[in-house]
Length: 509
Ligand SMILES: Nc1ncnc2c1ncn2[C@@H]1O[C@H](COP(=O)(O)OP(=O)(O)O)[C@@H](O)[C@H]1O
Ligand SMILES: [Mg+2]
Image 1 (cartoon, rainbow, N blue to C red):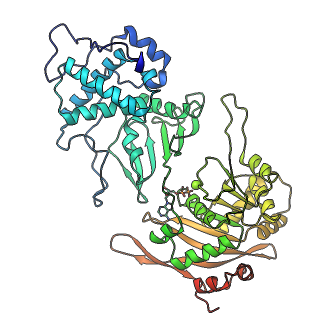
Image 2: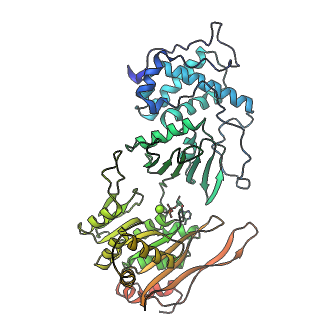
Image 3: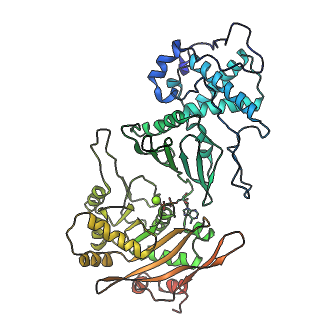
């Protein structure tokens, strides 16, 4: 039968008396198990988070909003503005009731395989049927809400769905069932979204990770995955996460930022952007350094803009995020071990293999371990214009981090030899930072000059200087050239970019 329908809806009356009017009675007896149970077994992921008969409050009273000043749209205020807690509770009960009837009537496992639009249509029809059979009194708005919530539970990420739909959110952070934070405009704020309970949250986590062929439970409580739209997901489940599963989603931005948008956001000055352009075009080897969420990957993506159409570029990432516009790109992705703990392909495996693929440029999404050595080697052996990001708070620290990664990789090289490798391989470090007012800035363009004795010498070409703070706590500052003449001047001349560089650095020809 199409849609896995089991025939017309036959809601089980709550009791023998005629269907109750508006007020739903005390929670219905647990959904009659007769037929639904085996289905629930067959498709645990879809059905498991069917609301239990216990009508746990789904939408508690909105927490005191922290997002006071910004009159941002609040799509997660789904309930009627005037809805009181009692009305919310009633709606939650109705949802449970309708959901249980739906369970009776359709095979949710089957239905969730249909195209989302079809599912919505089907659920809308059936919900209307159930509501009229049960003689429930709902406003049009409430009915739409019930349908939407049920669809989200079956298809999507339940209460998170409205957040997923928003384009202005960078991260979603779920700390157990009762707390969902988002990062919006660089600020972290608490939402009034909650899950029914930890079981519902775990089910949603499970649904996400099964899509990439993984599993999350007590025996393998840590898991990385990806949403259909490319967003990156990390789940850490109890018992490691003490207060319920922690789910972190780095939303995938469809509209990638380019260098011009960074200038528009004042993350870089127009002149600074020009210097970056020259750096990209001169095929310098670049490390992009920054903290978590500081904009490293975004910046790396921007820098790839300046790769020539004809160049063979190979990208290595843990989760493919980069979006190169050039035609000749090979994209590689690492692979975590499978359920039996076998089959892992590390970043190092990828970078090493890359070298046998005749690359002209190698781009490593995130340098975190011994692959640092292989990337340096690539940079030192004619793959100019290679790039990678690294987690560090300033350019000097970025160098130290690379040294440490190589040391931890078990190479028995003297420290000085490692430093010489680094000094020869890396030409420029670009530092990205997320400042305390939430803004993201490129704070340094720093050149690696070479060695002086045992020390790698660096020189800043551009820095962001703080001048103070305004009344709203926004930092005031400016990007300023240091006035030093870059070592790559001759390269810029070779590529015919000398005068552009000179003007961007505020120097006469
Ligand atoms: N300069 C910027 N201005 C505003 N938002 C930015 C900027 N750079 C990055 N972002 C946003 O910040 C989030 C994190 O950026 P990402 O590049 O993934 O950080 P990282 O790789 O350092 O963890 C993304 O949502 C991205 O769109
Ligand atoms: Mg990143």
